[in-house]
Amino acid sequence: MKTRILTALLIILVVAFPVLYGGWPLEALALFIIGASAWEWLRILPNYSKWNWLLPILIVGVIATRFVEGNWRFVLVACMILFLWSIPVFTSSFTSDDCNAAIVYYVLFSLFYISIGELILNHLYLITIVFATYSSDTGAYFVGCSFGKHKMNPRVSPKKSWEGFFGGILSGFVISLLISAIYKQNVDPTVNLLLCLICPIFAELGDLCFSAIKRHFKIKDFSNFLPGHGGVLDRVDSLLVNILVFGILYHIFLI
Image (tube, rainbow, N blue to C red):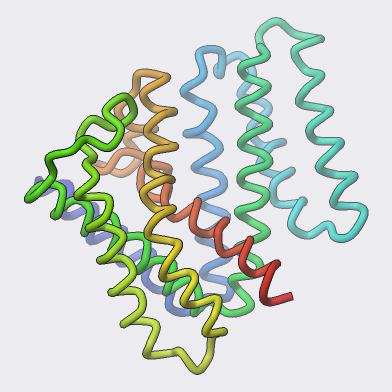
């Protein structure tokens, strides 16, 4: 427990400044998450040690996709997917399962990094997202422990309950709405309200999506990079999904 608490405090100290300040610290944090997540995402595959040379190519591909615009972005994404798709033809150590995992990582984190670029334009939205996400997670835990009786999805996550799910949604919405009232004049009210409403729901969904992956590969955590907390992906799974939610709202309402 002591290790878990100390690690949690360290995480807060490292992450708080990029979230509150935005700009280059947020950019640096996003690049760290991309690199660490690439390693954690792919290392759980049985044959990873035989084709780990692909890791830097994927990371560079993700970063490049954000900065290539217009028609050339489509060209880059299509070329990356065709490249990854063709590797199993030429080597047996990179299977179709490996190919699918690599393509999902590339597409998912490219969208994540594009959304980060949009968040940097106004990082106050990220504050709303963070409070909506982690207040939902905390609320779901305490409500579930206190009142949870009806299992939500025991196949994927045996401990989650419907009571915790709705408690998490309520706590995430209320806390993020109260926090964002501090800077409401500097954000679009419709987008901010939608983030407060939607992010707590997708925080729960994101956690379940990543839990399904871990259950499939029979692992407890993606890594032990963060003592007492597992890996980077174990900490940012719900946040990753909610940053994609912001990207969707940005392209609907803010462009």
